[in-house]
Length: 269
Image (cartoon, rainbow, N blue to C red; front, side, top):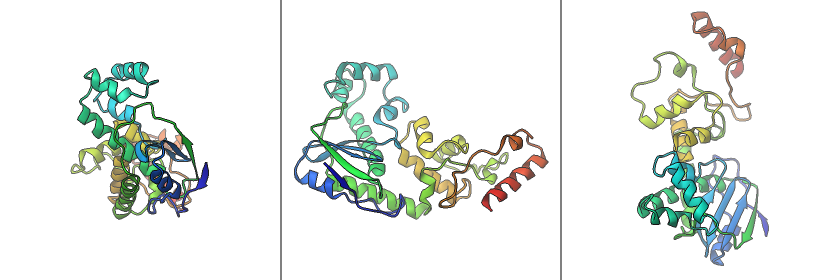
């Protein structure tokens, strides 16, 4: 079963409404909807899980976030993964409270759905009967999932309307790279993102290291860019990267700082 999703201009527009997804919800279908940007798992027409390469999965949010130990997680997957009951096993073994697990699951669901429902996400396919290994608890209505994805996209546009930041390596601006230049008033989340920004890691990679949802990192990156602490790449330009080795090897002398500023100016031209 294959169809094209609604077209869109780019990741910065409103979330694409998927006619296929609406039809599957009306049919109370169970299975997995696949797009280039990830997958939505349905149970009787409602969304129970979502996965995307751009978003840390629930296992990352639980283990890297410190809610469940890595060994306890591996044990639950080994014992109950084939039965699609990993979540239930974690609760039964007392590894995590049911309410806390549900909050984490819904957070991961909406985080990944934001990317899965991105405009121009490519062809849409559906495989009937496929279940997620985590289990199938109460689902979220399709309309609510699409509405939340659209709300998040509008929020990012209001913060700093440059969607190219979402997938590009996060590069500190020259003002942020200077010693002692980072504002002391930055909230903890933004400071953590800026501390991991190296011109190579994307917002999604930074989110995985921090054990946070990817959307939270996107919000922090947009706010940092609005403050002038993160470089905003021009649409269509190559992703920003590290300075060449010959610049990095000079050291932190005043001449090196001048060369770095010249390099940034040349790259902008």
